Image (cartoon, rainbow, N blue to C red):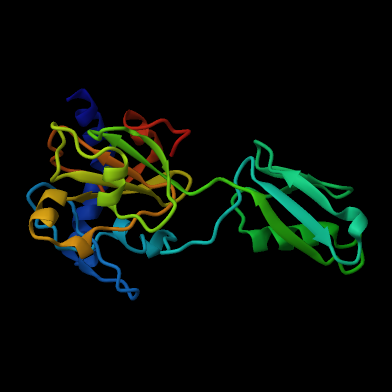
Length: 252
């Protein structure tokens, strides 16, 4: 009960914005990709609306259905210079997000796509090498994963090896416990480094109505949380610190 009250307090600031958006019908729009979900903003609402956390995300905040992989700490990249092989090097992204290039110094890598990083490396060597032509290969990287918490058999972090629905994720994590609130399963998804999008799905109703096509597909880094008690209201967006009651920040 204490955790529930803490959650409600953290998301209260977002409730008015969600209400305004719902009144404009934004949450009922279906994306051009045809992806739909069944997110609901409060208990008792029919699970028949598309949920942004189950589709392409919030486009206004930079969400996309199949985003390119972005480099992160401990990833290993190999640089190959076509005209200057003596500058070939293999680098590990440091805890601060930078790599140190041979003779060119530090370059930020964390958060960049492989192509963006290639351009950054080329820029770093411009003026040092004539027409630097470099290729970047991703050698080691963080494997896609999702986190399942709350009233599931085996809470934890799992590799996301293929297209996986929220219901399949719960089964992978050991299924519902006897105390699980099937009608209010939460899906949390990254929006940016500080913000997470939240949606509630009535899986009990969806299973009863055999609405299997309505189950949202997970994206890398998603958190599925099955509560024990009813949640009366949750804002569409909340800060990452509010998730500490569910899962360690190092996992999400």
